[in-house]
Image (cartoon, rainbow, N blue to C red; front, side, top):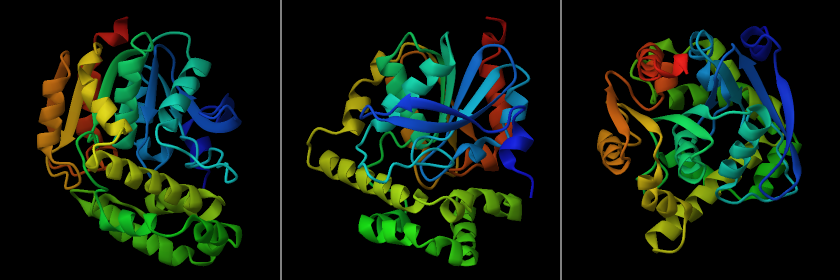
Length: 311
């Protein structure tokens, strides 16, 4: 099967070294396509750049599209010797953008990527020109699926052992079967998920050591944040919620009408809290809009960014 990066980007998979949130150098995998104003695509938790496979070519007709794997995900570095902490994605995403772009950018973020995008827009008004967020966990109070909670309960040393022994590779057919079942719940029309999709969605989990352990660690961080939220202790989610009014860039909020993870009411509430925002419901769309509703999604994005094309 042809390498997805090579098939998608003119220069294939590229790499960038940035200091991570703790100041250590870390390698980030990215690809870019198109010319013009920069547009950054941010994927969700448990995903990587492949999530945007249906949007990259389309959007690159109008923008310089940059797609990268967040640290600890996909093809980017996974520093197993260091523990992560909540919010590191925000700092590292900012540094990736600053390293690759010398002007304000359009950011499109789905799910956790949308949460990171909101935080960036709040704290860096000169960095974000326009913002689009999709199905964001901004008002969630727990992990959206029982399998995530179960995965988060596995001790990290066990996950690291599984990684080091390459057990995921040995059980690749089982992992792909489970992923197929779970991913179909995120789609309005599960039949659109192909064998090639499953191959690439699970590729980092099966082929790249450290992915399982770091995925579990990120979920454990999220669980702790929700616990702090429930206990009314300082947490990143509350900080972002309380500062939504500071987002002054033009913002489009897109929400899957059938999203079972985060209901449409969350999108409407987010719209009420961001002054210069528009809200649009995506019909026949569950949580994974970038896969399940990419045609409607791409059209909505370009319609919103029409003025930006002629900056």
